[in-house]
Amino acid sequence: MSEKTLVRLQNVRHGYAIGKTRVEVLRGVNFELAENKWCCIVGASGSGKTTLLNLIGGLERCDSGVIEVGGRNLSDMGRGESARFRARTVGFIFQSYCLLPELSVRENVMMAARLNGAGAREAGEKADELLEKVGLSHRRMHRPAELSGGEQQRAAVARALINDPPLLLADEPTGNLDEETGAAIMELFQSLYEERRNSRAIIMITHNPALCKFADVTMELTGGKLRKR
Image (cartoon, helix red, strand yellow):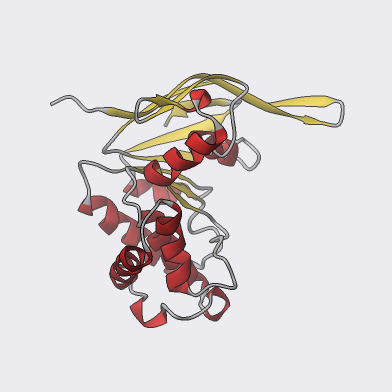
């Protein structure tokens, strides 16, 4: 059975103006990922890894080229359509967790579902189920500041999963964690991935090549292009 492509990039270019200087970050990136694969992307600091992830997730628009997720060209979408598509299709996991400090852990997880149209009861039930799965049910009414780094990242994983997206984008998910806690987070990632082995893809960027042992394929971003390692 042939694998279905979930993410496709064709000749993607992107850069930024710094003063009067134009810095080209991505210089013709070509990439495909099947709907059931885990890809790890490594590269030096400043190589454009986070920029690439933001483009795939629709948080930024590329200067030129084609980015398709689930067969949809992201450049063809307006801002509102892009936000709705992103809520249904992509789960983001950030290095800095990005939890809202004024909300409880449960409310943080629920919010992603509410923004996707779920009612309060449905969102609450989903949040409770996921917090149980990631080992945080006993902390669900706490604020993020009351949690350890590892607990905050587990909450962020639950939030990313609440709409059951086919694509998870993880930006240095263990970057702010000690080695032991980071290993526990990666074990959680692996179990969640295996749970939906045939219908979920992960793109994870990391500065730690050792984490690539979990992935099906490892790519390196260098010189503005992706190369298989």
